[in-house]
Image (cartoon, rainbow, N blue to C red; front, side, top):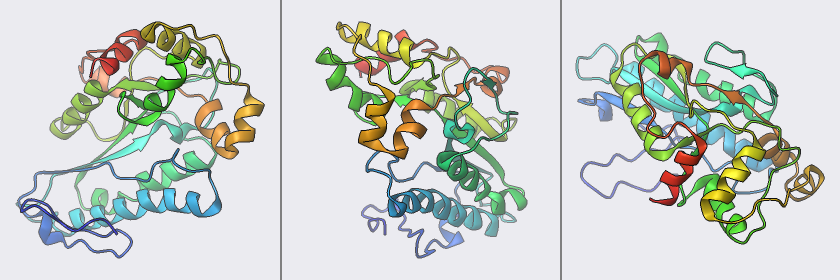
Length: 271
């Protein structure tokens, strides 16, 4: 249950209880859905995995059904922009992955596919649906980077596992600008990769982060240690790699302000 509305322009909803009437979308031009339980908040038990899945699928389906119910109204939303993730591809090694690439295997890949499919009611009703597939959004205030910073500032950072796996990332300002573009650009439909256009490996990411905080980054975290500490989460979140490229955004003329890892980390540390 999400908290009750506390401001006049807020709307209460409860995805698990299917509480959101289509009337709340009257006069709304666009719906942007970013909600979902933190995938790195707890060790992945069966219950946690189900909660991760339900928090994405149930909320998306509820919003999609509400969008569909008012699709014939001139006052209903014309676009549903729903978050997704590059985890849809599973572990793909050196393969370059664009929006036409097939989905992969694994828990996160399955969740992402179900997450995107949950928007089908809106799609079937003629609403433009866009899935903004995010890589790691770089911010010192949250997400993966916030967890890495204390380690790297202590000089204890380094590559994860072999270091050869690719790490999709995007600067927070570029992620926000890209999502605004997804709202406004009628030519963007379906999956759109919201990642920086210059892919890096875990080793390259570690070196860049070490340089950004002025510390060495030569202490690798072995794969066996990560698996011992985190279980299945280690293989899916830290040791799997996706060499994802933002082809749809680039072809639409979107310009990244921070296309490289050095610039993206610099922007995050200056927030």
